[in-house]
Length: 393
Image (cartoon, rainbow, N blue to C red):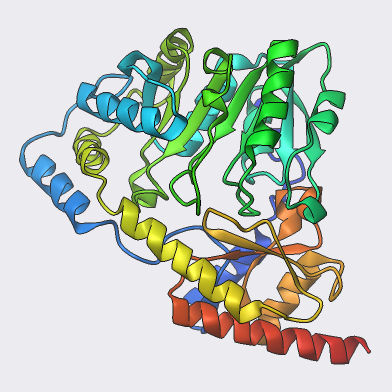
């Protein structure tokens, strides 16, 4: 057959994306093994009933037709209101575009600010799709690692050292997936200073903004940053709507107009009845407080269970849906650790190296299981570590 495009074959050039442990565990679970899945960030509970009923009403109400490319007006208005709350910057309807999930918002942001041959900086650890999304735009990128010992906080000097003549953007994620780290105001001010002096875009993935113990700080709120920051957001985590595929991008109106042009040739808008349910969920905050409280309790439960565990250190883990554990004193190869843990204790976790070298030697624990399951997983982890030590010695 004719050759596929280099653009597509280059998205994941190695053919491996770091998710092999997760997919193997999923296959084994579906075959009947009692695998505890702590490897993926998908809620174990259903979307709030109010959102579901709003969708059913919209379906029965005949809302089955095409929608505006930027999202139906009511949805954009609701997203603009939430963006004002999330970023601390008054946001108009013309500064947001509704997208089919946070990944589509990220894709839109990258496509609107990067040309083939331009350069971006990615702060690691990063969400697994970041490299492929940049490659899909034909852009080059440099990964700047944070350090476990500093709680995975970004260092401005390291980021600035990676800036090139053709650098156009910096991509960050706070609260962070996979580490759970919440970037401090000081860290964000250092990045903002670079963007202002070097005239760079800042792409800020803030999909976990509601799952923070304290106040969320968006870099969009810092001086001189509203006109150069694109914020990626999503209802997947905050509103329990992973499978509904509703996200949005916030940024300067002129950039949002270009993203709408991109929608013309990609998604051609969103599903009408889902958009109306999402509008109701945003306007009424269906599930937001409850979901945030649930993950806070789960984080507290798991951390309490592993407190004092010999040779295992908690890193980051202040927000989001994940806990990052440093396992280097047990097994330096985190992928080997994850496979062995799956085989010995039937618990699936993600090796940190799936998210960049900064997280190598770590495992990511998803909190998307009830507290008793997390407590049992912690018990199995303790047993595994004890047995692994005996085997190693």
